[in-house]
Length: 128
Image (cartoon, rainbow, N blue to C red; front, top):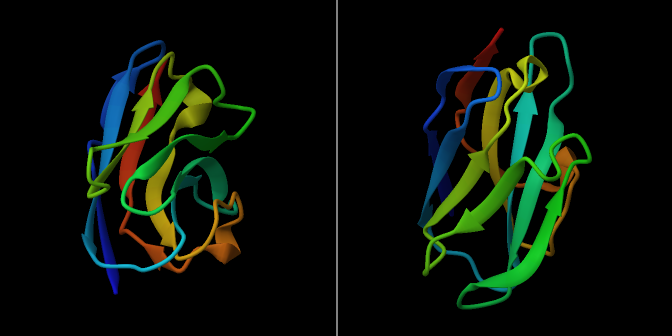
Protein backbone atom coordinates (compact mmCIF):
# COMPACT_ATOMS: atom_id res chain seq x y z
CA UNK A 1 0.00 0.00 0.00
CA UNK A 2 2.96 2.31 0.63
CA UNK A 3 5.77 2.98 -1.82
CA UNK A 4 8.97 4.76 -0.81
CA UNK A 5 11.72 6.26 -2.94
CA UNK A 6 14.87 7.77 -1.42
CA UNK A 7 17.02 10.40 -3.05
CA UNK A 8 19.73 12.89 -2.17
CA UNK A 9 22.65 10.61 -1.44
CA UNK A 10 26.12 11.33 -2.71
CA UNK A 11 29.72 12.03 -1.82
CA UNK A 12 30.50 14.63 0.81
CA UNK A 13 33.59 15.63 2.75
CA UNK A 14 33.76 15.06 6.48
CA UNK A 15 32.12 17.94 8.29
CA UNK A 16 29.77 18.62 5.41
CA UNK A 17 26.03 18.22 5.04
CA UNK A 18 23.52 16.30 2.95
CA UNK A 19 19.75 16.26 2.85
CA UNK A 20 18.03 12.99 2.03
CA UNK A 21 14.44 12.84 0.82
CA UNK A 22 11.92 10.03 0.89
CA UNK A 23 8.91 10.35 -1.39
CA UNK A 24 5.87 8.55 -0.01
CA UNK A 25 3.04 7.31 -2.21
CA UNK A 26 -0.03 5.26 -1.46
CA UNK A 27 -2.26 5.60 1.56
CA UNK A 28 -2.25 4.25 5.07
CA UNK A 29 -4.80 4.38 7.85
CA UNK A 30 -4.37 4.67 11.58
CA UNK A 31 -1.03 5.26 13.29
CA UNK A 32 1.77 5.81 10.78
CA UNK A 33 5.50 6.18 11.42
CA UNK A 34 8.48 6.77 9.16
CA UNK A 35 12.09 5.89 9.82
CA UNK A 36 15.56 6.24 8.40
CA UNK A 37 17.99 3.34 8.67
CA UNK A 38 21.46 2.71 7.30
CA UNK A 39 23.54 -0.30 6.37
CA UNK A 40 27.10 -1.06 5.32
CA UNK A 41 28.33 -4.31 3.70
CA UNK A 42 28.54 -7.13 6.22
CA UNK A 43 26.69 -5.17 8.88
CA UNK A 44 23.13 -5.26 10.15
CA UNK A 45 20.81 -2.48 9.18
CA UNK A 46 20.69 0.06 12.01
CA UNK A 47 18.28 2.72 13.16
CA UNK A 48 19.04 6.37 12.46
CA UNK A 49 15.90 8.43 13.05
CA UNK A 50 12.11 8.15 13.09
CA UNK A 51 9.06 10.36 13.10
CA UNK A 52 5.43 9.59 13.97
CA UNK A 53 2.35 10.65 12.05
CA UNK A 54 -0.47 11.35 14.48
CA UNK A 55 -3.24 11.39 11.87
CA UNK A 56 -3.61 14.02 9.19
CA UNK A 57 -0.12 15.38 9.83
CA UNK A 58 3.15 14.17 11.31
CA UNK A 59 3.12 15.04 15.00
CA UNK A 60 5.52 17.75 16.06
CA UNK A 61 8.03 16.51 18.60
CA UNK A 62 7.29 12.83 17.93
CA UNK A 63 10.78 11.93 16.83
CA UNK A 64 13.59 9.62 17.87
CA UNK A 65 17.28 9.48 17.03
CA UNK A 66 20.13 7.06 17.41
CA UNK A 67 22.67 8.28 19.95
CA UNK A 68 25.33 8.36 17.25
CA UNK A 69 23.48 11.02 15.25
CA UNK A 70 21.80 13.13 17.94
CA UNK A 71 22.59 16.78 17.48
CA UNK A 72 23.79 16.21 13.92
CA UNK A 73 20.81 14.73 12.05
CA UNK A 74 17.26 16.03 11.89
CA UNK A 75 14.23 14.16 10.60
CA UNK A 76 11.31 16.19 9.28
CA UNK A 77 8.40 16.07 6.88
CA UNK A 78 6.47 18.28 4.50
CA UNK A 79 3.08 19.72 5.39
CA UNK A 80 1.06 16.72 4.18
CA UNK A 81 3.36 13.83 5.03
CA UNK A 82 4.21 12.98 1.43
CA UNK A 83 7.93 13.58 1.82
CA UNK A 84 10.18 12.78 4.75
CA UNK A 85 13.62 14.36 5.04
CA UNK A 86 16.83 13.56 6.82
CA UNK A 87 19.06 16.59 7.20
CA UNK A 88 22.57 15.37 7.97
CA UNK A 89 25.18 17.79 9.27
CA UNK A 90 28.71 17.46 10.64
CA UNK A 91 29.05 14.23 8.70
CA UNK A 92 31.71 11.74 9.70
CA UNK A 93 33.33 8.91 7.71
CA UNK A 94 31.49 6.45 9.96
CA UNK A 95 28.22 7.82 8.59
CA UNK A 96 29.05 6.22 5.23
CA UNK A 97 26.30 3.74 4.40
CA UNK A 98 23.30 3.04 2.24
CA UNK A 99 20.44 4.95 3.81
CA UNK A 100 16.95 3.49 3.67
CA UNK A 101 13.57 5.05 4.23
CA UNK A 102 11.00 2.85 5.94
CA UNK A 103 7.35 3.01 6.98
CA UNK A 104 5.12 1.19 9.42
CA UNK A 105 1.40 1.40 10.07
CA UNK A 106 1.85 1.67 13.81
CA UNK A 107 3.50 3.82 16.46
CA UNK A 108 7.05 5.12 16.21
CA UNK A 109 9.69 2.41 16.30
CA UNK A 110 13.47 2.20 16.22
CA UNK A 111 13.54 -1.47 15.25
CA UNK A 112 14.21 -2.71 11.72
CA UNK A 113 11.89 -5.71 11.97
CA UNK A 114 8.91 -3.60 12.97
CA UNK A 115 8.84 -1.71 9.66
CA UNK A 116 6.65 -2.98 6.84
CA UNK A 117 7.75 -0.96 3.81
CA UNK A 118 11.20 -0.04 2.54
CA UNK A 119 12.72 2.08 -0.17
CA UNK A 120 15.60 0.99 -2.38
CA UNK A 121 18.22 2.96 -0.49
CA UNK A 122 20.54 5.81 -1.39
CA UNK A 123 24.31 5.75 -0.95
CA UNK A 124 25.97 8.29 1.32
CA UNK A 125 29.76 8.39 1.27
CA UNK A 126 31.69 10.65 3.62
CA UNK A 127 35.34 11.15 2.72
CA UNK A 128 38.40 12.22 4.73
